[in-house]
Image 1 (cartoon, rainbow, N blue to C red):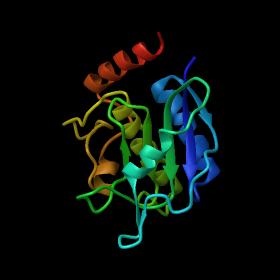
Image 2 (image 1 turned 90 degrees about the vertical axis):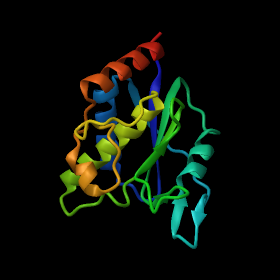
Image 3 (image 1 turned 30 degrees about the vertical axis):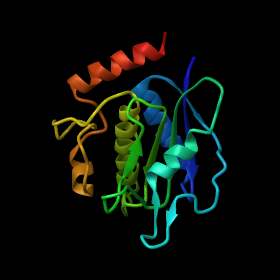
Length: 175
């Protein structure tokens, strides 16, 4: 049996990680393990931007190995960017193994809203690792989010079309 492993970098609350693990198990139907991965201080940090480069973190995760690893997700507390963008909520290797999601810009006074936003972005980025691209349905979790209002508009679930694609990808992993 394969597992989606979840780790965190920075100051991510344990309850948020456990909630994320439950969400991932429910949505993707694979086993989930929360594990620790050492993080080199300031890896990918750009002092001019005061942000971390998401692609650098994804490349770092390539060197991490766990038993029966299917996907590896890092949830981080710091702000992420990608070249040409002011920030990103997360990034993933399309059809690959690794994904990273930042909770930095997802915070809210309402803890429930923080959890919900995190689950949406986690499902979105893990969807990319299973080969899904952005969806035109604004309620689908695979719709592109450029702002918190975009995140809040969508659900944490896949539309019927994206769910069919995800199910086909998951079937390949279960063989």
